[in-house]
Amino acid sequence: MPEGQVIPWTPDGEKDAYGHSISTNCRYFTVGNDIPDETRIPFGRLVDPSGILSRYLKEDVAHCMDNSVAYLGLKNDLLVTKDPAVFRRGDIVELGFSVVAYRTHVKDNASHYICKLVTRSLTLLDDTASKQAHAMQMNAASSHATDSKKQSDSSRTGKRARTDIVEYNSDKDVELTRNRFNRMRLISSDDKGTDEDGE
Image (cartoon, rainbow, N blue to C red; front, side, top):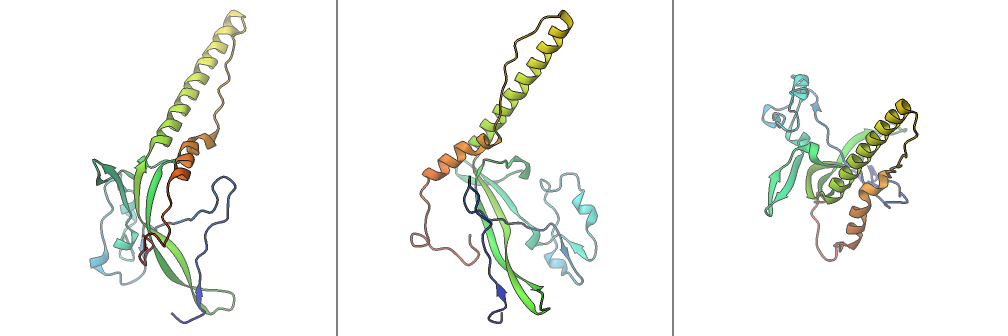
């Protein structure tokens, strides 16, 4: 690519709770004319269980290898395929991605290339925090349901029932994960090399 025409990648803005972060994505479809047949692949059963995405496939809209993301997890120290729906906020995951330069145009109408991160794989390493958060939510919902029943019963009997207020802070669902992550030893580029795809 010509020098000076590459717009470098930059991380997302810093957040008080999490610091710097990155955003990746992967499009479901490749759109264009003359998409090679050998690059077309069907949607995975777990990604498109009801066949809704497959309905959009046609001659100039395809699902290709570059649109595929591997959703994985550990089972007995082996990598196995996971349902994308099991990933939740608070999980500790390993993200595999590629750095891809896309051709674009800026205000001067000149051709430039912008670098973006494209998701290739997502591996679930630890879901302890999200499971505990889910249990907290279920307990809170159960408690609120009980309180509502007490209030309903008291309105019929004319007596005022005691209500226990259960508070739920949405940030608590990642607190354990954040603390655990802070204790992890981050491997720098001096300790371990990285490949060109950033994986």
